[in-house]
Amino acid sequence: MTQADITILGLETSCDETAAAIVRVHGDGETRQVEVLADEIASQFADHSAYGGVVPEIAARAHVERLDKLVLNALKNAELDWTELNGVAATAGPGLIGGVMVGVSTAKAISLARGLPFVAVNHLEGHALSPRLAEQVAFPYLLLLVSGGHCQFLSVKALGDYQRLGSTIDDAAGEAFDKTAKLLGLGSPGGPAVERAAQQGDPGAVPLPRPLLDRPNLDMSFAGLKTAVLRAVEAEPLTETRRADICASFQAAVSDVLGVRTRQAMKVFAGGVDPQNGLRVVVAGGVAANAHLRARLQDEAQAAGFEFIAPPLRWCTDNAAMIALAGAERLSQGPGDALDSPARSRWPLDERSAAERPVSGGGKRGAKV
Image (cartoon, rainbow, N blue to C red; front, side, top):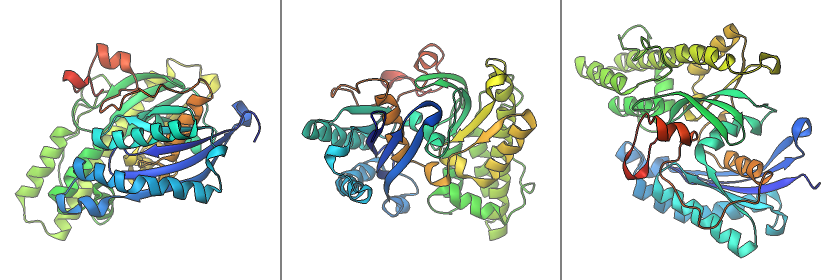
């Protein structure tokens, strides 16, 4: 390795995916290259399938049982030993607090035992940087972060410099996908199940709302759309055709909301940057794996003169490679974090906007967005 190379072990335990990965970043600037040396993940779909959603206690116990083995597998598959690592990073929030604590505690133990710097990574920053795992993506760029727990537009100006442009005021798009799958008895994970069923349906068969599109800002809402799906489920017997039509109509409604808002967000973003540096829009998060949504956003980007960028499908959903990358980029600019850095259930990327203009959440845990 050259002096500029950084090799990081990353851990991800924020929800129902237990993951460990090792990423090496070579050089910086235009010479920067990212190499994923190991990428281990253990899904918990079977653990939660009987409950129609993620059970936090079950998730935390599964992380405890699986994480140590995944770390050892990552080292073995990367053909590295502990002395060849430059640091260890873990998702420190936001997420299910029990799971987050498992990853953070494991990373801190490794840091103490092996004398490695510890990096507390914001899970959302991992998603924000995830396209940089596969290609050079220069700052700044517009980010649509769309997942099970979050749906927001951010101006990504530099590492650690994020400005919220708009957000869901209630539920995330991914949550709406999961709830729709549960209402229709499609199983888990909900997003892929709805997408598969939608391929056989008519997107115009079931009238569903496009909430908030009559408002001038970039905020979104999906709670009412979930309620409309419930009413559609209750209105007629659930034949296979009816299920497919509801899925296709729901998917079309979400894509319309995100498509229109992305079109508007690109105009806002373009007004605040130098277009000579290029205009880029990135979509990241679990819902970014939806092919119908990707196609819609790509069309919107092309029409607006933006380059459309999305991470490979395996790095759209929760993974440790993005956490390792975020840790490496953080470590390249500083010494790491203190071992008393807390696990956090809520951790907005744009903390100033969340404090001054909270969109959702509150109380002792702080604003969600």
